[in-house]
Image: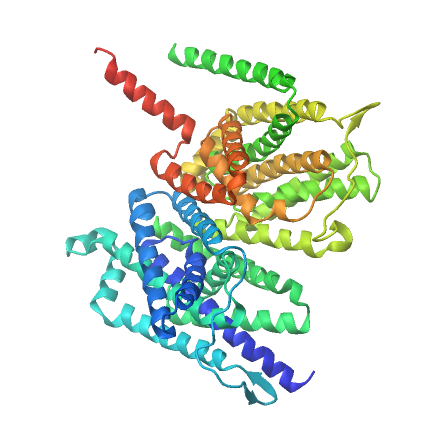
Length: 291
Length: 321
């Protein structure tokens, strides 16, 4: 095998893995605050890409369109929390799973009706030829993806660990009642976590759309892969998700390159089982503590 | 006394349903009959999901995979290997149930959210196999010319005969499930749903019970899948994918997760909505998403039970006390 080929696969893997990390970040934020796995997370990503596409189509300058798309998807996250999550209160995990699945189905179907079934592409963030590195080609958009992912990770890390909002989120996650006693509204924190997760998801959808296109049905697989990244990171910290996403992206791209691309999605699923079963003891313990 | 009356009412309702099911197809509209056949097939899968989700409290977001396994095993054995279709069906059911039972042991170490993700992943893996193992399954273009079922010289090749076959199976599955729910294992199932740790402390082998119920629900799904394959005579991957798994959850939720006979209502509602809304594109999927959220928030017992509650509240308010 040629070196340039390997380098090419690694670059692709890191790019795609960064996206998985961003999607996984949304799962982690919501789960660590509310104990909910948001099955609609992948749909936020889809909405980000598709909304940005439509706004650019309206003739808005690209940076404005992208930012507006993030704001709009964040609003969707807020509305979803207010209309579907809040009324359920402290429901069982089966109920919450069905609610977020219903939300995912709803968002996806509305997107399918509105945007149609065709995949769309965003223009890359910067023009320019691909860079050459050890014989492999690196698209400028790949660098954008990796850079934005890193910045996003750092921002979310600081937000969760160095700000008052972050402390409030953590407090609500650790002990709802004690948090309420010091004036932290757990329902508000749940809302904030959904808004944050929707915003990060939208950013993920926007940065990947110039490379791998966006379509109404991209949410399921991206959501699942993001979840794998988050679960590999233990669904708690920011950096675990980051490494999980990179690991998954690399494994997938190498397997697609050297084995067969038709089983590319199967790699993520095998990872999913491996993670779930290896970590099952810890995960179940966490689940019981949350209940 | 009250429970006796309630039991009588239930028996009467079931008898009325059976009579209705016998009479309905005699109206002779081929389209209605074919819709009812599909409803019967879906109701069989839904009951299994109700046993698993409603009574045992375990999520499955991959039930369509068992349905697909039943369809593909029956189709491949009867067409490619010329096995008798009934025998192929039996093998499909047993093999799918055995697979589900085996996979139950590792998978049921997980709970709640993680179990949901694992079953979702399992469903997608099996779906990918249907698509990629094209030398066995026919892949994307599909698998054609599946033989039909027959007894002696009588072939179930008309919609009317297939209708009675499907609903015969469906009613049998309902009665079996009702009996299971009222038996020792049924009590164990509900105990696990309410508290897994408490059930363990009472000496219930929780993983074994959960694996058995998963196997049973997979057997139902495989039965329904093989009926589907023999009825349509053609299978391809799309009907066995992730969306159908979610649609099955919708059927179970609409009918009431912990309601055996509600499964028929759920399957019928979801199917009829799809049929009516078909001309308007994918509106039905939008509606199922909404239905799932609204029903589970407002009336987690299902629509039938929910309406019953409203009726009871109303009649209590109206009756002079």
